[in-house]
Image 1 (cartoon, rainbow, N blue to C red):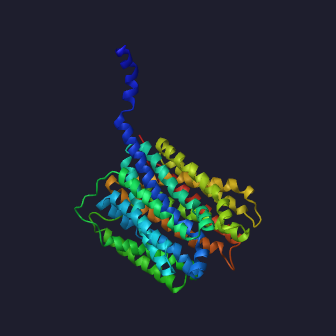
Image 2: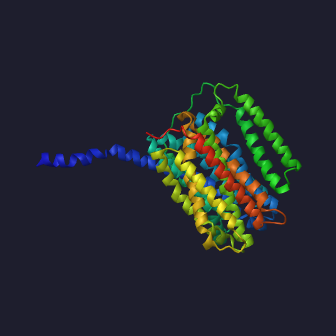
Length: 475
């Protein structure tokens, strides 16, 4: 009887070893921790925007100053991303992630308790330092944790879901919190959530190998990239507010160009550069980063200016406008995990190209929009747009980080995410300039903005289709 029992139960016992079960559980906890940090970082860039009118009323700030409550966070976030990725590669991804989430929470606490606008802006600057460290490190941790190509693709899909979903539902969350609890809680709620992420990451995320320290961290290239990206973003923000030929905008663009040239000249001389410029000669890497910039350029325009359309032209409240565009976020959340599985099975090219085509076609479908267009007649277009963008996000991210060796993943992730942030700022500036032609937001201006965003996505789909022909499929 004992022999029969042993033969019957042996396959069950050996098919799922206890060590493997524990390893899978640890991997899932790691993924939950890093995606939670990524979600918080992106959510804060859109949720606070809904609270600006209330903040301006309570603290006595004008419209221009209020805009900088959002812009200060995005500007610091984008400009320090490359340096943050390099620091994580050099000194440890887990430590960089934990420090980033901690700084994010501390900045949110300062901003949420701020008695004046200057202190609020200081808190937002500190808060923006957090994503510059945690975002590139989080993706590097995902790549190092999941060794199987298909599992890694699914994990990157979930990471991408947290990123896009945070952007899509930010206005809804911000509107509800402001209406029910006040603007300060839009910031203060980040504090306990950040503490939970820090605790989970400290327990679950393993220590990962660092980059070789033979040449040291590039302390020249890091400030050059920070100034170049920061000046570009500042010029775009100022250009939208004061005109593209204004002195602040032109000065910022000149500074961005000069520091970018100096950065390229310096990096060509380095044996181990902060950013390997030669990677952009890889067609797949270049196309993935171009797609990241373009998708966030279109995505931010889709969310921000559709929300403005429902509020300013149809008279909806901020909360209702957030729910009006939630079809984008729901479809995105459904598409990103599906995309990860498609990448794991077919490689990055089919889902990336299909997503860009679908997203571009959906954005062009919004050219039918009129001032009295009902949500019931366009919700499916919004859903198609969100699904297409979600479908494209995972393969572009997976392609960008697969182009480098594992110890430089933070660098590749930082470059990719920095370009996404530049795309986001470009979307607000360029599409906003088109949408707000003349005296304010108008249907013709929205049509011009959506036409540019849709055509850009379709052209990028063609570039990706050509560039990724040789991209390998997972084994």
